[in-house]
Structures are given as C-alpha cells and as structure tokens.
Image (cartoon, rainbow, N blue to C red):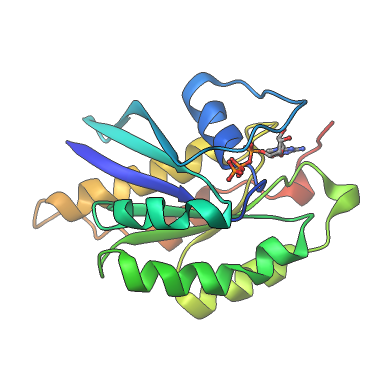
Length: 196
Ligand SMILES: Nc1nc2c(ncn2[C@@H]2O[C@H](COP(=O)(O)OP(=O)(O)OP(=O)(O)O)[C@@H](O)[C@H]2O)c(=O)[nH]1
C-alpha cells in the first residue's frame, strides 16, 4: 500500500532534516537552506509483515510558499506538524497551522504533533508538558524528536504507517489500534536519554 504524508510547520523547525534523517539516517548540520515550494521522497517501511510505501512531502515553511503547498493538503493521508522546542513562535503558530489543516486537508487526515530539536536542551523554551497539553487539546499524538540524533524520528513514521495500515483494513479479531496509545508506549523521553 502507498500513503502520502506531509511535513508541515514554520520555516527552520527542521522538516527537511527530519525527512533526511528518516530516509538516509544522516544529519546535515551547517548552513540552513530553506525549502522552495515542495519536494518529496519515498521510503518503504514494513509494519506487521505488510510493506507500506510512504511518499513523504517536504513543504516550505515560509509564508510566501503557502498557496503552493495548500494544493497538496487534500491528497495527504497523514500530516506531521513540527515546531522547534527552542523557538516559541514556531510553537505559538501551531494553532494557526491546525486551522489551515482543517480548512484544506481531508477531514479524517491523521495528524501528529512533533516538538523537534529535543537535543538542544540548554536552549529549550517550550516544555515537554506544553506540547503534550496542546496535543491533548486537539486529540492528536505527540512526540519530542531530534532530526540530529534521530530520537523518535522512525517512531513517528512507523506510528503513521501502522495507523494507515489499520485503517485500510483489519481482521475482525485483530485488537483495535490506537495511535496515541502506541506512541505513548514506544516513545523515548529526552529526559531519560543523553545527547551530545
Ligand atoms: N540541533 C538540531 N538542529 C536541527 C534539528 N533539525 C533541524 N536542525 C537545524 O535547523 C535548521 C533548519 O532545518 P531545516 O530542516 O532546513 O528546516 P525546515 O523546517 O525544512 O525549513 P523550511 O524549508 O524553510 O520550511 C538547519 O540549520 C538544521 O541543521 C534538530 O533536530 N536538532
């Protein structure tokens, strides 16, 4: 099966790095090159013995590209919405992103909230609890991630793939799949892991 996933969030929150970490297991530090418009990469993951091809669309966070990216929301089955834990405005803008999502995306789109750059603990301005509270308010799963160390990057995509595979069809005797419970049971907390 094939699923379209989109990465959304303000410019500089780490969407492109998040995708490269997942696709290639690499982190390109140094100069920040803002995405122009939209770009995509494919990656196949195997969930419960089923191959799921994720077509992942990396969007530009800059305001001037918004009208380009809006056109792609409709086809997306899942959206990963990122903010940067060291940047307050990227967190404050999450509500506006969710408003846009409700306007342009499919009603049953799977949404996950991600607090990225969790490796930058000394520059943190958004507490983990604040991310959790916002996610709970909107009824979406939440993870803190690091595109630099790879923390929770694969988990975010795997959880999405599992949810979409479950929605696509499941056996009557199969236990129901709850993405939020799955994420909670699998996630690594930044407080329990050491980062460079
Ligand atoms: N320490 C740290 N830096 C990160 C992380 N993710 C991204 N960065 C850095 O943040 C900057 C922006 O990353 P990008 O991935 O280009 O950001 P983006 O969200 O794709 O930006 P737009 O394309 O403009 O929307 C780069 O300098 C990255 O090296 C992370 O998890 N940890």
